[in-house]
Amino acid sequence: MSHPSRRGALKLTAGIALSGALALTGCGRGGDTATATTKPIDDSPATGTVKVWAAQGDADVLDKVIKPFKAANPDVRVTFTLIPNGEYYTKLQSAIAAGKGPDVAQFFPESQGQFLDPSVLRPVPDGLVDPNAFFKSLWDAGVVDDIAYAVPWYAYTYALVYRADLAKKAGVKAPATWDDMVPFFKALQRAGARYGLGADIGWNIFNGQDLAMYAWQAGGSLLSSSGAWTLHTPAMVDAMKYNASFFTSKVADTSTPTFLDSRPYFVAEKTAAMITGPWVIGLLDADAKEKGWTASHVATAPLPAGASGSVSFSAGGSWGVLADSGNADASWKLIRHLTKPDTQIAQYKAYGSLPAVVSAWNDTAIAGEPLLEAFLTQLKNTRAFPRVSTWQQVATRLGKEMEGVAKGTQSAEQAAANAQAYAESLGTGSK
Image (cartoon, rainbow, N blue to C red; front, side, top):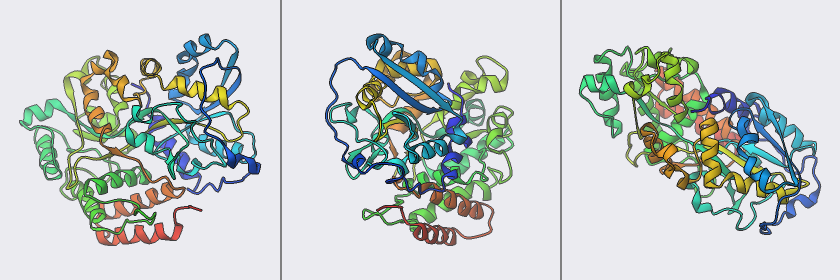
């Protein structure tokens, strides 16, 4: 399984650095970019040069993964510029504004909303891919006003990862509902863990994303059908209280573990569960310094259901072709290749990137991994974060407000009201 940096702190703080609204429309671009067409892409060989920019991580293996594409298209040259996660969006934004961007750029579905505009990206050509081939929320994350601007590449979401050995010792099964959570964690503590859940409340944007999925589970939304923020709602208050219950019940600690300590704490039984992404599965053996430790100590489960069920958020990687690309035809052909099931499996084998194409999960390379089953189940029940330029700022503020509730310094009602007021002051960045 792949390294977590691009799915963790570095990637998401890249979004924070942009202060949400990028105001990219028209920056350094000619007015003709808004007339991008969705003319179908044919099956003729790709030619010319395709310049690709991507964040370091999953894209590190792309030159190897696309060897079949280059073999089938000998007259195309693909160049890669890999940029550190923490700098990626900032450098991409600057290049776009200066009219010096690549042909193809990688984006992250959970934070790409500020780029989804015809002045920045070309609409996905008609028939390039089948939208129904992807997890629905991942495809939806690239769509604004019924126009798709981004094509999903790899996928992840959050699920519950817990110490199976301690659960067996305690005689408990994975929690199915919110009401089951605290008793489950307390049982793990009685079985030997210091805390039942490892949760860091100091990473505000992560906490804001967590709160979004809890609000969805409670039956809420983040935006109304008319595009107004809906954060001061009974569902958001319930989400705030639910998250705080982990800390007020003492099954989680407000001080530790920090983000980077989560796996070592889990291995050492300082904590017994994490609400996290699938990349941890491939890293725990190294943390435990014991091959096979994960298989004998760890289990996974979909997130416990609130009043409206078990819902998580969709995340991962996606691709878009810039509006002023000099070789859009070959660029789309490359993206089409990256979405083929065989290519998705090759990417998984090379780096552990889980497929965004649902059918690729049937391959034995993935289907034979029992700890991934919960993530597949959860990916089928996910939602996309708001495709608005201010979401990153709003998520950060939600996290700050949630921290206060967890520490008992303010009520959930006040926290939701504060978040709503802040979000309304920002708006959505829409035209």
